[in-house]
Length: 548
Image (cartoon, rainbow, N blue to C red):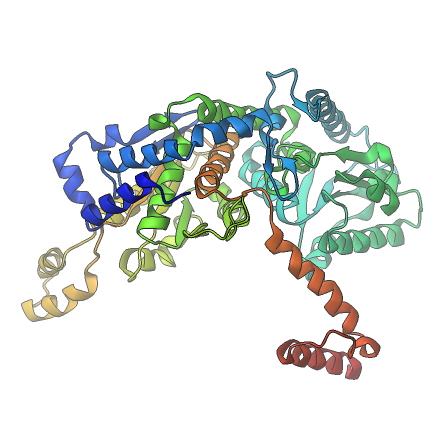
């Protein structure tokens, strides 16, 4: 399967260049930057600082072709069933396709439903912004609390914060996802029930964390307003399960539909993105969709040699499967992208953290990587020390807007310079001799310089990509998100795994239901027997709560 003849050629090639010095590659090819860079909608990628040669890319592309990557991409955009364990399509790209009038799923055209939902969103957003939609006491809505988890939280939360410079300032958006009641309690504490709107975002409307928070929010509202009809003016649902949303008490006209062919972590393009639209307005939300669609077209139509998602996906596989690197750092030098690494963490790790191939056979190669990171320059005073001098190295994606949203003139050039300096130091490092000579220039004795120089050595030769965005606009953010969605798809397709299910999430939920039932003393001894660790921890909890 994955280990075909072309894979074996890659292994042989890796053995010949594993210790290659990237600085030597730059010296040998003055045009390396021009050769190893790609322009795509809204984004410029410099991938010249990677442990690759022309031959590396040629072999990776040949392997991708032998694995029928082109057919996998066609299947994604044509609506074939890719989530084979749940027998579902993966049609998040259809949600942002404004040019197509017909797209059949089970012989039914889904485009009218998509456009109908967008129109419903526009009407609702306009009503809120124009104070036509009022709360139960006839006051305008000032705050929106999105109650969701996973894809119903991470995407909207990330995008709302990323696009804060475009906020209409009409409605302030808050996000509650954690089952720990402290988050909901602290979120609600400063809010006025008369002017607060809740969006309960759950595809199934059965997710325990979301429903627990939603029930508490409902009680908070009804206790304050003492009006059983208040739900109609203060609660909205976004769900594929309309009956359950209605049973919760949300009127059908307040329910925004999305569909089982939209995966949760790919759902911000749907009505799950309603809080984004409430924050920035519907026109800008549609610009977000248009930016994503532009990247879709690039991915679908561009030759693999200059296809940004394909090249990035192949690089990730190169490091994961040949260098056996387990993690990948995402470091945006943009304050407004501070939630982007967490968003990508779910996108990559929930999609490709799999051991089973699509045919049910356990994979015989490593899949998935640990995604982590945070914003620069904060990271420079935390984990960048490890990036530069740790015993392990990891590939890094630096993300950097060229234009700022503020007018503090001295800040952005300095931020930009810091980002470039980090990628340059990862590339070049510092030798012991260079450190020694620098120390001598600082009135250090030769003996002191020799001793200290060893501690200042940085090996360099640590790979990174730099992604430049002209400005973090709705369109640019859409393109950036879609880029990484497609990178994930490329890796999953080539690893022959299902990137669209998440069975690892489900078992823990089931066990939690059983455990919470057995936390009641009368049920503690129920079958099946518990392992001693779980039983011991439960007993400490029940004894404490019994005595408190």
